[in-house]
Figure 1 (cartoon, helix red, strand yellow):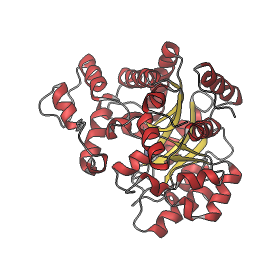
Figure 2 (cartoon, rainbow, N blue to C red; figure 1 turned 90 degrees about the vertical axis):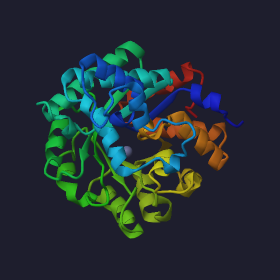
Figure 3 (tube, rainbow, N blue to C red; figure 1 turned 30 degrees about the horizontal axis):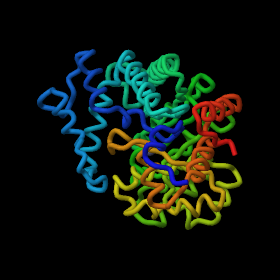
Figure 4 (spheres, helix red, strand yellow; figure 1 turned 120 degrees about the vertical axis):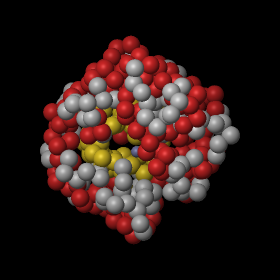
Length: 356
Ligand SMILES: [Zn+2]
């Protein structure tokens, strides 16, 4: 059976490669800004329409032409400006969970870089703690469980170990991993080995945005290897050239490293021309723990349902593929065994059994 859009929109969902600051829609940003009297940067005329225009909300827009990188950074800056106080962080995080719940999410891992939230005096720990409070509040109101991943904005090499130490304080309290995010071209993974080493032997897992964008294909492949070996990555975000790397595939299959594929995000940032470039069928055939993710849905004007729709179309996937991709995501989740059981049970309860 081929899944249609209605099915993919309504089915229970899980995803783990999702940026909190890339997932808040203009309407929600506007509401929170109004509540706290925040003047949004980069919007000369403070209005919801101006904000939507800045986000380039336009149904006719082709995702492949949507991204001017500097504009994108300024759009992130608008959201981040709301997330500088305890209340702002709590509200944005709670709003995020409500939005996920409305899309029938059972479980998610969301990520943000605490280092960008220190403008008004918060500490790294304070940024993490208040975000966790918001996620917990969202869980109590909706039943959607959302864990947190603390990203290191890789352009600041010295803050990496500080972010890792702050995240370690919240292991087993909602933070499940650290991540290396942002500019891969100029700040390759080897610069952050020290930060990642701090988490070896802890309960925190390790994600790396690797193999998304680099100056040469050779460097792209090298970033994947460095992330797997030296940073001991438990998740590779993107890893676009992985299908061409038999030894790396053997490694990720053996260690059950999760591969977070973000097809529509890759199209939007123009690192691929076609969803088929990711060769997902080959990865599935080789037992790679690959799953689908939306990355920055509000920035790309997408959703996880859109990601499934376009991927199913590109690969002619049927309902069994959707089950496999959902099951891979559940097995890849950095939650406890008990929580994993609960996720499988929730999927069943909501009418989509993906357990076998
Ligand atoms: Zn990402």
